[in-house]
Length: 301
Image 1 (cartoon, one colour):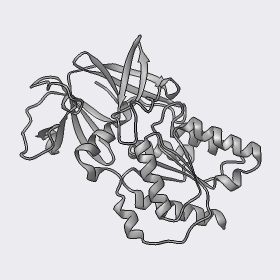
Image 2 (cartoon, rainbow, N blue to C red; image 1 turned 180 degrees about the vertical axis):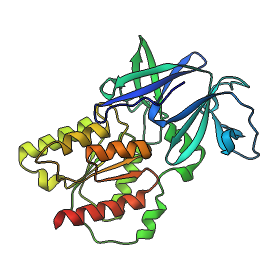
Image 3 (cartoon, rainbow, N blue to C red; image 1 turned 135 degrees about the horizontal axis):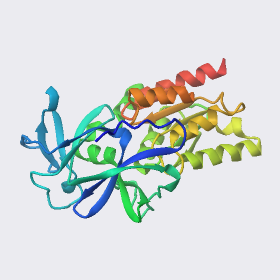
Image 4 (cartoon, rainbow, N blue to C red; image 1 turned 60 degrees about the horizontal axis):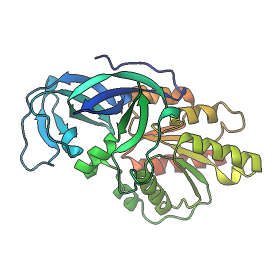
C-alpha cells in the first residue's frame, strides 16, 4: 500500500491509516508510516517486554516487532496479519495488526480528544477518536506505547539535570502539546531550566485563541515571546498554528519551535516552508532548551 501521500503544509489535515485488531477499528497518522508488509517470521528475543514478539530483518535492518493486541490486552494474532513499519522519534518499529482497511484524509478539527476519564497524565494509549464512514476509529498514541515498552525512547529528561542550576528567566513561553504527560514533562524541564512564565495549551486552536486574546488585551509581548508546538494535535495541528503565526505581520517575529516525534526529513521541509525557527524531535529536551535560549537571545538584539 502506498503511504507516501503528500499533503500541502498548514492545511490542518492529516492522512489516517485505518486498521483492525479483531473487530475493533484503530488509526495511525500516515506521516509515521514507512511501509506496510505482510507477516514475516519473527525471531523471539529472551527477557524482552511481554508486548514484544521479537525481531525480524527486512533489507538488512533489524526491526523490533510489537504486538498491538498484547499492548491493548487482547488475545494475540498468531502468525498472520500485517506489519505496519513506523518511524518516529528517530526509531523504527513494526506493529503487528490483523488487517488494514484503508487511508482517509481528515481534518484535525474532526478529531475528538478523549476526556480525562480515558486520557490521564498517567497515560492512555488513545490520542483521539474520529468518526469515519459511520464508525468510531480510535487513533492510538504510538509514542506512549513505545515509551511504555522502552522508557529510554521517551523524553531525555536527564539532559536537563546536566544543564545544572540556571538563573530565572522573565521570557514568557506558550506551549501547545496535547499529551498531558508530555506537557507536564516539558513544563517541568523548562522550569528547571529557568523558564517560569509558561502558558500551557493542549492544541493549536487553544494556543491560537490565547494569542488572539492576549493581542486584543494589549498584553501579547508580556505573555508570548516564544511558541513551542507539537505537530499532531486535535482541532488544530502545529503546522497550521505555525502558518497562522508566520503569516501574520505582527506575530511573525515570535520564534516558533516545533517539538515533535514526527520531525523527519519530509516534515522538516514542511516546517521550514511554514517559517518554523527550529525543529526538534521529541527525545531531545536538552536541545529544546538550547534552541529556546538561542532564539530568545537573538530576538533581543
